[in-house]
Figure 1 (spheres, rainbow, N blue to C red):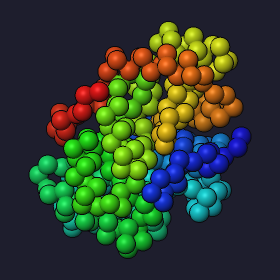
Figure 2: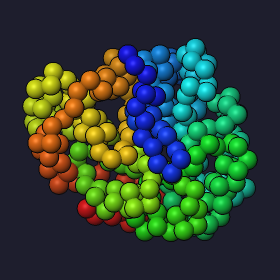
Figure 3: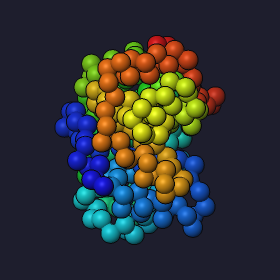
Figure 4: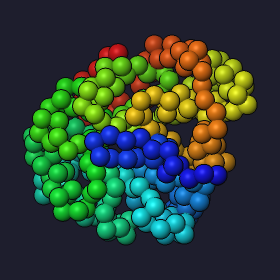
Length: 281
């Protein structure tokens, strides 16, 4: 299988492999590192983790077990909103690197907005991590249009917004804002945690291409401008399936049919304690 590094999205100097391996809510330690290693051996070149996920140790172990050189990989991690203050932010970055056994990450994200800490302070710490060489690229996650506009004024080096986006949620306003600012979009929960995999439209289109519903749902995303995905998978066959999406394409009609599913507007990541005022549409 051709490594996914051959298929990248590019903007503002950042180039991210279009399909990454997500490591949120990972299994027991004895299995986790092996899954990461298997994803890399299958061709993934982007591994997505976060301090909050608790998977950074297994990511580091999986990278070392994969046999692939660090320079061939793109690693993303995130600083939790609990560490939004500058000193806490810096300590979190150091802890993440030590936990993974890495000298730097390729993308460092602010995981969630923190209204109790000035955004300028958090983004200042983010930019400092890049200046120090601890992160090659920087960005944000779960930022709305208003927050993104504010963030870009403070820190124009931001190159990525990782958001919930899949075929069951409409994100037109946020996608337009990301494109206006020249940002890459990375989709977490790109399969709506499996909810859309039984959708009749997706299943029918998948049958026509002799692909799975998951492969069609992921393909629909990556055929959009500067959009990448980081699906989680807890079985080796799922890991292999999720990256095997480069040997077919959806027609304009098929893309439009799946577009229509977004009116369901299902948000599956909506934590009460840190929920921003989401954009509608």
